[in-house]
Image (cartoon, rainbow, N blue to C red; front, side):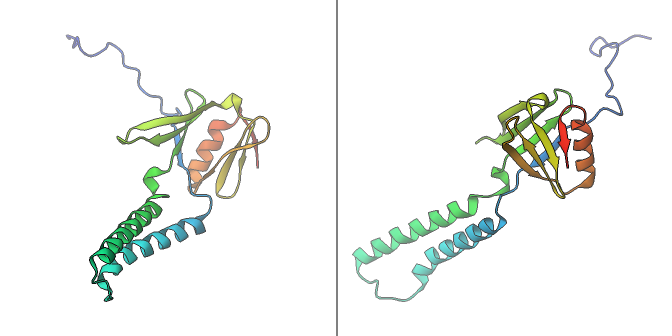
Length: 170
């Protein structure tokens, strides 16, 4: 039996019990702020269009130019408020079981993930698991990040990955 020269003689098959990386997304700290920004942004965009629909005494050409400037300003301010906490702009935390590190990744302008922070597990102070979140603390006790965990399987996988490498509380 001839062997294909382009296929290696032995392939490293992934182990069935090898832990897989855990990806968690950052959530906004204050959900009320997100709702407030979305409502304000929507109101500004609608008022930018409403300036042109409302009847008024804007027959003068100088006032029409002012009305155009105000509506463009309202539109872009509303758009900025709507895009401020969009899901695509939130970074992700990747817990790598092979390198024993946590990486914070955010998409750049071209949509490619870019590493913002890389910390080895042994450089973390401790990890605290709460009801629906995990908090990572630095050696000095300051909070590094708080991540929301909705899935119990992801929570168990992360706890198993960090056990023995990081002090786990909670």
